[in-house]
Length: 459
Image (cartoon, rainbow, N blue to C red):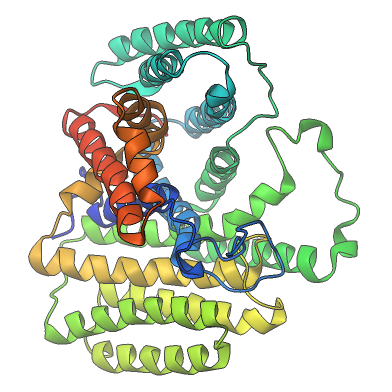
């Protein structure tokens, strides 16, 4: 069953865990002669350079929108409980601002930390520095049960962050720059504050939030099809290291996710609990199949066939669930609607692309995420599946995001295992997959360990 109101929504954690798993896996598969669908759609073989003229998406391109969707779905789960506990809107707005500051600083810290490998210091010294730095990140971002202890540990971590910054320059001989940022975290920082504020503004009216979502989609359409209409919007190049108008286009995915989050929260608090029968399970499989069909159709550019097949699968889903509607079927309808509209935008946008991000990409991947969620939700309701490994990662995304680069890799490198795995990874597709799975499974183990100990990073 769905967790009660005081517990986490497991479906969201599992979806986020799937995202983290896929993210670490694709980042650690090194074999260069794998098929193009194993890489980002716009970085195809043989040279794997960025080419925005290439149309289509791969499973790798689903990682970011899946994460954005689950981030949006978490807005009502986090903030509604605070409001119900008497926390004022001003205090929540202040917490959103602090979250934005935290993620922005974190993005800059990560962006500079990625440069550690460029230092002339011995590998063992760079490895130890990375591990210590990760420990400092842990102290700075960790949340403990005791609020006073949390503040103490966080403050010590912030002090040590300054110390590490000094050592970064004086010992490693590397320059610090505010322009060295982790763009993914920077986008999440901006979505966190603006998406959170939009949720607070529309928390009592999903219709109003739909209107806000449509308005954002319209702005995205204007910026893509008639950019001159927005020529009056001021350029902000001087602060481009922490804010760009382009970041806010991803609110399309996050706000859609927040609508789903509210629906899941309402269901978790209701006395009614959905029953999943064989027809529902078949419909859930149809939803997952429709998501997979997109990866074939949009990657191979069989867009018309993809649309027709997707429309048929949507019809099958409706036929199976028409008189058996529940939260899972609502999520399926939501997903099919977004996905079909997104596919329709493919020819309008000249082909779906993640980079540069277009409406076809945002709408289609929003639908694909929701359909995957419908499948996970059906399994969860039917068999009380918790997906503990994936949900453990989903509960601690920032820790999972960093542990491979700054903890696992340095340790395996100093032991000689990392270089050996990398060499083997370049030798065959099988070893490339083994290399990727090794780092990914270690990440899952470490993250789940800390999640089980209730040691979560602020995110």
